Image 1 (cartoon, rainbow, N blue to C red):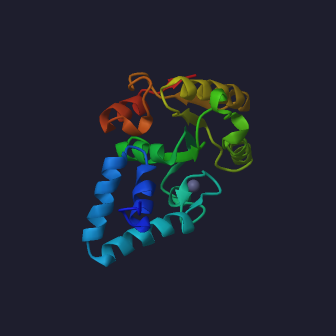
Image 2: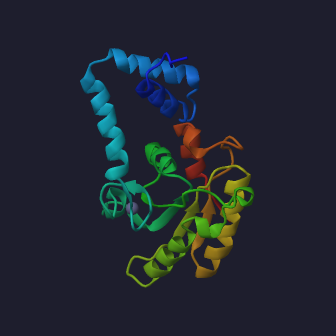
Image 3: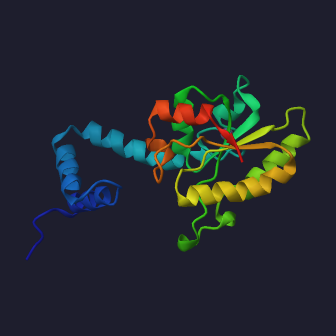
Length: 205
Ligand SMILES: [Zn+2]
C-alpha cells in the first residue's frame, strides 16, 4: 500500500515530534499549519533553524551561548567582575538576569554531575571555571565570590557541594542560593520574585 502522506510531510512531523513537550498530535498540527501558510513563513523558520547552529558559539570565558566571543555579558564594563554566578544551563543565565537582582558575571557548566548518565566533572566546564578563577586572581580584578546557582535538585546540590570543595581552598567566598526555590525543580521555571529572593538571601557554603 502506497503511503498516504508525502515523505516530506512525514519527515517534518517526525522532526517536530522529537522536540520536548511535542507529541505526535501537536507535531502533525504544526506541520499541516505550515503547509497552509505562505512559503515565506516556512522559509523564515528554516532560516532561523539553520542560523541557530551556524551562528552561535560558546563564549570562551563563560561558555554561555553567543554570536560573539567574549559574549555581551563578559564584555559589559558595567558588571561587577568580583562575583561569578555558576549555573547549569544558558537558560538559567536568562532566568537570573531577568530578576534584576544580580549584576555580576556568569559561568555555564552545561549540565550537572549525574553519575547514572555518565556525566562526571570532566564532562562539564569545571576545569575551565577553575582556570578562570585562578587566572582572575593574578589580575587587578580578582573574583571575590562564587555564587553556586545549580538547580535545587539532587544533581544540582551534589554539583554545588563538589564545586564548593574545589573553590574554597582558593580563598574566595562561596555562596549558594537561599532555600525556598521549589525543590527538585529547574531554576529556569522559578518565578522572578522567588528567584530574586533566593539571590538576595544567598548563604555561605
Ligand atoms: Zn561570556
